[in-house]
Length: 209
Ligand SMILES: [Zn+2]
Image: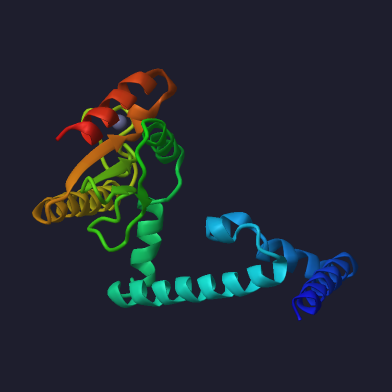
C-alpha cells in the first residue's frame, strides 16, 4: 500500500516535470507554485503537488485579508487617489534607504499599514512606533532648499501644499492620541553624506524607552 503510494507520488512528479518542459505555461505555473518564499518554512521541501495545495490555501487567506481591509477603508475618489499617489508615492529612494538602515540596526517593521492614520511608511507594532519618510517638496520641509514653490500658479500649489501639511499634522495627532510614537525622516536626511547621522537618529528613536 505504502509502496504503491510512493510510486504514485513519483509518477505524478515525473508527469508534472515532463509537462513543464513541453508546455511553456505549465513551466511558469510550476515555478510560481514552488516559490519557497511563499511557503511556510516547514513546507519548503514538500513535493510540488503538495506545494500547490499549500499555496492555494495561503492564497485564500490573503484574499480574505484583502476583503477585510477593503471593508475598513472606504474607497477613495478618483481625484483623491490621484493626489495621494503623487504625494505619498511608495518605495521611493529615501524610503528604501530608511528601510535598509532600520533593517541594519536589527529592527523589523511592517510597510504602509492602511489601518493607521496617514498610512505610515514603516510601522513597528511591538514598539508602537511609526516612521514617515517625507519628500521635502510635497510635505514642505521647513527651511529646506528642496521645499521650493513653483513660480507659476501660486494659488494652485499653495492649496496643494496646505492640504498635504494639514493631512500630515492630522495623522501625527491621531497617532499620538492612540498611543503611537511617530518620527518623520525627511528626504534630505537620507543623502549619502548623512548616512551616519540618519542611522543615529533612527537608533535613538527605536531604542529609547
Ligand atoms: Zn529637506
